[in-house]
Image (cartoon, rainbow, N blue to C red; front, side, top):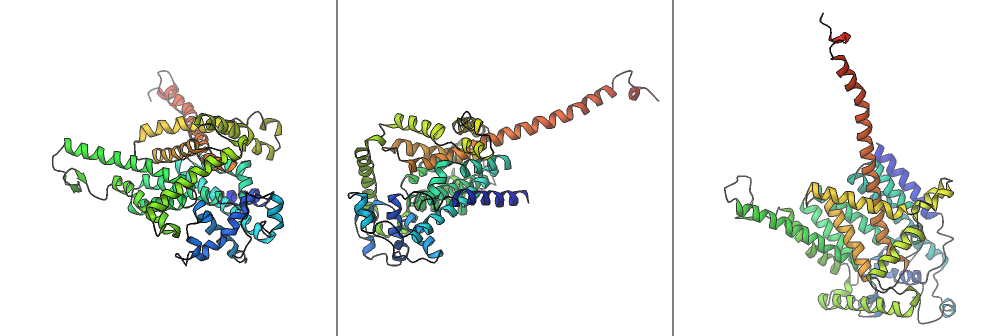
Length: 444
């Protein structure tokens, strides 16, 4: 019952935070392109039609964000006949005069779609935080997302990043559940989610690396143990020293195949030449990232160290959920001095989670969540060529989860300490009662 109340309250708070500025958010040119491609959700029924030819807009962005925009428009009574795509080679005036700005009704419908998906993400993050620690950890993780200025801003825009963050949050939750109780069902869910995430932005494909690494290590460990102890075990299921396909290692090793099939299945552009066109996607993305650094010199990122420095500054100072929370509760004077908690809490959480990984082993909810969130952050840092706000959103998601984990672990420790303190007087009382000379110790 407590969880239900908290989920409803957090969802309502997220809706208030995200929906309140939908009408007032400034227009972003990328919104024009995502709404322009809303018709992809209908064109997926014609997978060999002209939409999926090898052309700039189809090759430039995977389609999940376009599908989400299309579904959002249809759900709110709009059609899929929207504006022409914004042309970044032309001036803002040219684009506005030629109808590249979406009509207000379509723009608001797309933005409301993301505000709703953002609120769902908050619920998933709470459930994951609850699973990793306790309700306190879940609430703090959710609150860090609800109040984060960058998250609020992007959830007020008709872009693809909110759908990506929701997909990643569900993926992390599914991975934690898999670690608790490995099954092919959860392995398939994980693979499908990686494929869907890659069909939104390509970076989630990097998450296959830790999944395969954990699966391979689990298999090698058990093969080695079985090889060293060849005695017959009636509970052993396998082929000699090799475990059967019910082993969690095989399940994790299968996720790249499941993810690859999903990635191609939801992206008809890839159907004709899956391998070659996937390679083209990466080449195009790499060239576009390099081009962005050249076109926007002030946003240029000079390597991973510069990316880390900018991330530290932006998430620890420029956009602070902690500062926003203190402002909401009327303690503005504390907000700015304590804004560093946005960085400090995740760092503390990393150490605490690392300790639990050592204690609980390779296949635990802590190890798999830490591996996935860490890999996602590393993939963004290593691939960042331009300091665009949207690139930080997956990092914010990981920071919220690990930061809430730190607070949840701290709350658990405090509860244990309080219980011990409560028991101490009773123990002292019992000890005193049993000492020679006490009334209860006198013979009767």
